[in-house]
Image (cartoon, rainbow, N blue to C red; front, side, top):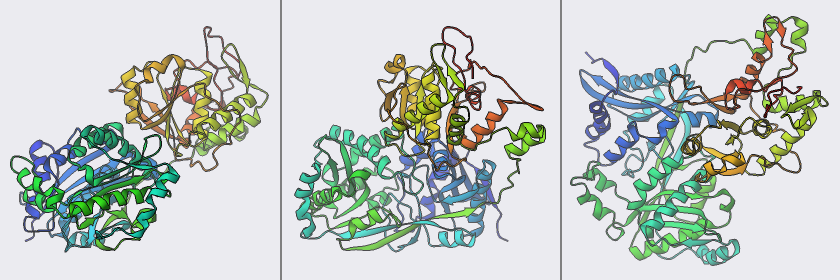
Length: 621
């Protein structure tokens, strides 16, 4: 009789050890599989992983008669779901014996866990970020796997497809023989360098490597921004990767390209192919794993390298930066006696990076796939905001009640509808709705001049002020996500919020500028910034896309950031003007709550808010 498969969540250190070590037993007779470094696994799967700032995760073990027969990680990457406008749960670190019932039980555990959290599809294998192992091997099982990627038995993809999974994307991995003579195209590199003001940067010390390493991950954020499931790395993640990987890199196997300002604009990271050594060490560096690893890390004893990462800023991708890096590396490979290079997995649809190798003799080495499957959900059916209020309001009241699904449409409407009426007063100046709308448009133009990708997070660090209100409407109506920082935030909290919430730019009140002096990777701008001319409302805003991040009140713990969509904000606005049977007809309003509070924000919709200065007397709206 076939044993029953039981799924249990990992709940203590002993079970985590079992989770991490299970593949060692499963693949003990496979000479193509390569374990991950055990210390790295404990870091990424433990509770101190920086990715848990924006990810949820649960680890599961599958057991039969008390014996572990499979494992899987369930992950929800909130940043990825927000960016890619989906509700997906990921599965990763999936391994199981040759038994489809075990595979099905693991997948069902992930699906159930994800569905409880609103997931509508399941995809994988994927990790917390793009830096983790991802993609199931579907071709090239006969080849030894590089140590940075997944190797699995051929029955893995067979079982997933039998369970209804289909292809989401593929990554191809190729191998190249290093030519004995440099291709003729390299003769143009000097001319390219002179024309575009770029050059190879040669690091000579670990400090220089670490400095460029930090810059490298910022370039990665820009270069990979549009690639499958990629989410920007936070500064905490970057610091961790630099500390983890830079010390083992060989300067002769890493290429950096800088511009005339000595700013990093491109990089290629390669290192010796150490898969056999890692397998002999069983993923351990200590106490004796280094005996196998040190010789393998020497290019003079290893004739094969692996290309781990390549990234070029978008504005330099057509300016020959890759050619400079390839020439530098090829010359070093020839000098060191390196004969082969295994390329990193590259998205099949990423034609820009695929075309980089057109002038080289390459062949397919392995292919990996991310699978996807829709989940069955019992989503409750809600009335629309219009239906809800139509049921409660007299018909004539409802018909004159405007409703707009996005902030941009709302701004356009009140600018025209109430053009001559007073909208905002700070006891010194009073703006009409037309003037208010025109200033919002000028703020919008300034924000768009920053060149940030749509959907970027932009913070406002100010008191209740005209600047703060105008920026709120400008940011959201331009297609970005606004976050109002409480005026009481201390310096470390400001820096921490910029990192945690991936803030691309922050508008700061003059008196608060000293608190932002040590922010890195975020544009810091005066709250009064405004352009001479206006810009129109973004035309392609999805009502379900994020519009704002508000802090929770902190009554059940530390305040947290809650994301609200355009539609959610506008639905909430109805509550600010409604009481059963009647639309509230207030003509003046004083905003006493901080603008970082969601209720204070809602009171600014449909009725522009007036801000008290030294006096609390209201202004007309």
